[in-house]
Length: 446
Image (cartoon, rainbow, N blue to C red):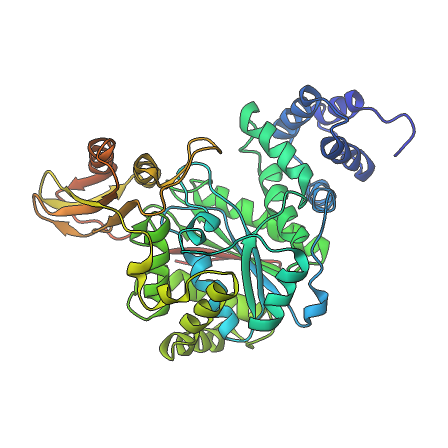
């Protein structure tokens, strides 16, 4: 620690627009980790960063300090390049459940740590826990041993992983500083670096159901994260994907597991499959298992065709204590008692959707949490019946609600009807892929 360093001086320096030295950033992170700095000083520092921003070097220093604020996972003994994928979050986004086994079936080890959800988006761990018997807690050695044995593991992050980020994120949530790009980028990447991945593919969502709602904001967030990876010597690439409607048709935990199984079994096509293939191809290239994305996509398609991806999912479920029969019989997943169609009130074309409102409708049925102590009902949620651009007739179902009680059904039904706007003129479906962001630059997709 540098002699004479104190938090008030650091806050003043950033408030005045100065660039913080690495030692100053490490001082803040150490104070957040060890609880030696009071919340009011950390909150003032976060607000100063939100106002004044951070340059690429500062953001990288913050990311690395948070990544090393607790335990880190060493995957070097596995050999090769362990590849990870991270999504900034969306509704009906089940790509992790598809890609973890599918990419592993193509020869690239996938050692992935995920989290629970709070809010309108579903958490990967909540989806996994809907599989009967499925365990999500593995010690580091058991985690590595499973990846060595079957090629993949999908488990929960430990509390010891990037603990400084947990402290700062909790303060950001209550101080109006969530939207700061350097704070978002460092939060996401610090956990990825701590979890030991050799290369990282980022799925940065854009649109009304995303954290960043404009394409420009999403590209800037992606650029910042890729820059951190470049400076830190960690290969990273980001895809900007649309979230102006749910990615898949199923929203809810067991429902999304079912859809992932259907994709791996070759029963589902459309945007969820397409985004999975794009991300998966980049993962295989990053892992050195394909020379280019065209070759990688062909390998993924073959793994779907021959059933290798679904077989790898069976192996992963069994290895983590779950019932592998769900891969062949999704009806073994938790089932909701009530299925209630949501009728459209008029004929016309689906013009746009409020994707967040659709996520909250599923949450109101019990598919998500309002507070971290809420108990999720794994069986409930909704299944979309339409996409933007579709023609609908009066009374035709827009979605089907899955519920275990009727207390919130009317509320969810009305919320979905309000969220899906029907107009007389047909519109083009929103673009799925908006841009590719690499260390070399940004490639817009028209």
